[in-house]
Length: 339
Image (cartoon, helix red, strand yellow):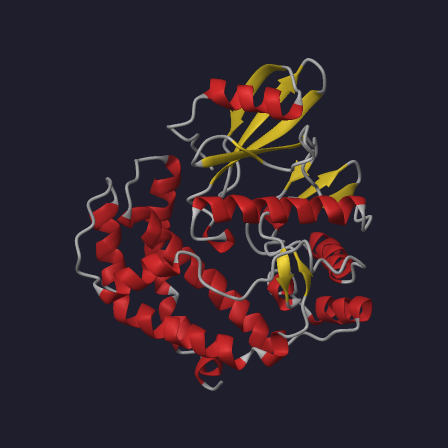
């Protein structure tokens, strides 16, 4: 996130890191990176540099609908990442550093949780499409290795059924798009933008549900998936590419990852060559649509609830018109309504 959480004191964070990981912090610097978690670079007298991540337990709906459930889900996800690296030997997995008790994540307070990672010096890539053929090929290789992993993951990774995060907030809005929002500076302007397309949005949500049902047989064979292997979650470090941000790891169909990567027939051919599995176009479409609706629902949840004027809320507000403009394209896609 571009803005540090206003209700979290740095002293509390430093104390939690010192107690939970035995680090002796000397300096800490907030890093305005990413879109789902808060990050700091921490220097320790005993262990050099570390990458400290704080997660808001109210902002990860795919992990649960209550803070305790989200915290447990985050622990499962980061524990899976650690197992993939340490037990399955997948060296491209950037896993958390275990705390003193072996746990990958620690509760900071009722709302926040903290985890600690190695600090990696290397090249980051911008969020967006996989336009670089070389980087895309590297991603295909890594994801194929992940999907082939000998780790069954059934007792570690959580099963993922395609769903829209913040679905409850989205449903409440669609049931009464005229209800006033008053939780922050962008509340009513965002609601007005959304309300103008509410009928179309409701129709697209119904289409998504139809697609979930229709693709159930094709999604039956699950593998361990990362969930978001876009360029923003890749880094080049010491001559190799690594994959970060494993809080979305789950058991699911291969298409859950590959819809974000495959940009050519060569990518598809290479993936099939490495895994022996062809991708189902309808399942690819399902995950592409889930991502789109997830963005819209996240905006609904952000602006119908209390919020502040920050770089993150301004960005979400400014992107809303362009995101909603995509509704027409989705609704005109005959494949969605032929299932």
